[in-house]
Length: 243
Image (cartoon, rainbow, N blue to C red):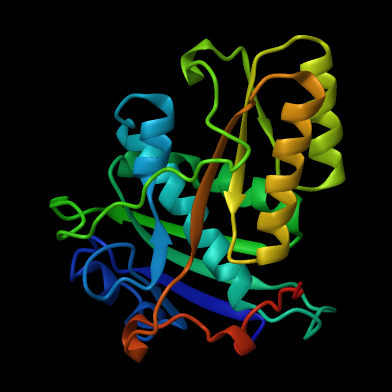
């Protein structure tokens, strides 16, 4: 895979925006979150259902920006060209374009600190949002250890519960201190990570005698779809360990 990548989000993209730069006319990766050409799963309804309220426009924008960055990251195959800084350019339609244009330098800097890669964002105003074109929303992913007790609104903090040892230790400390956390996780297309998330959820429930509030949001490639809306095949993107 190249060390440079151009990513365009086709969902609600104005036709004139893709012609603003030559590299956007033939991007390396085109993402579509809705409709018959959908090639990437992102369900904001999962978050809205967990919170019990509609999501504000800027939060919807943030979810789509984060999903786009994640999609670009897995498009780079690991262990190739690791000595070089990767550079990714994004064209993303958003609901609050002035806000994200003003925050672009901080967003790019924050991601550089996290990944030590180069990021360049161009935001444009979305076309009229007509919804998911009849695409059915996926239900909230529930932890198999049982439904969460209480409402998310009753939580006093939010904490990651990824399935790894670090977040598990943090979750144990919060629950031991009698805090009321809501745990959040990205539910990837990796059976080992899913099994680990389910295991730690059950372990915390058994150890503290109460079901934990746990929200796992699915996000990842779906398909196959025609090449203009394609994402890399599994063998062409970041490899995942197998159980």
